[in-house]
Image 1 (spheres, rainbow, N blue to C red):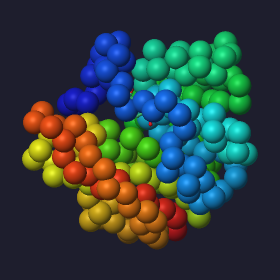
Image 2: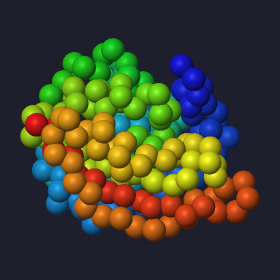
Image 3: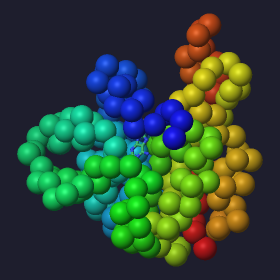
Image 4: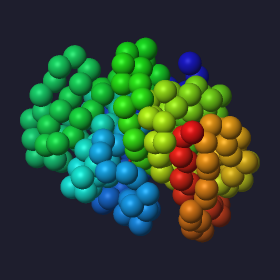
Length: 211
Ligand SMILES: C[S@@+](CC[C@H](N)C(=O)[O-])C[C@H]1O[C@@H](n2cnc3c(N)ncnc32)[C@H](O)[C@@H]1O
């Protein structure tokens, strides 16, 4: 597997290069929370995001997936609990995390069990060559009629390397359109750092409902 792989992310966490981590819950999640049905919510590539606690506090018990142990340790430290660990499953304070690769063969045991998914900095974090396997894994884990709330970046990929990678509108529709309904529900202009300064970026929010 080419970078960004588990080794890449483990080094980033160890070196503290985690600018993707936000000091508070994500504003787009707060704005669009009502789109996510109440019940368990899958948070792929969750890092130590405060979104997990926010989902828990809003009747949406989160199930994160994170490959870097340091991230999971720091997540539960921030939650103020010593979690229990059974194999790859780490739990505490109403938050569950699968500590391992999102593409791991054991995850399909949870097939069809998620009515909601929150993807922030997950699809945009993986190598473009892994997008279809990532989409397929999401489809496996989601229930029929399940909802994915997805935040993406759309920018000129020539201006900087990923992650985060640019995931333009046509890519989102190409990935998810054949499998249900896809609607863009918000668009916000911003900037991303580049080697020469900043690049303009659109942050898009989509709601995908699996057929
Ligand atoms: C860009 S960060 C985003 C974290 C989180 N979603 C947030 O908003 O702060 C991507 C995270 O996914 C983790 N990760 C990357 N590839 C993964 C994989 N294949 N399986 C599980 N976790 C992965 C990384 O360790 C990192 O913490």
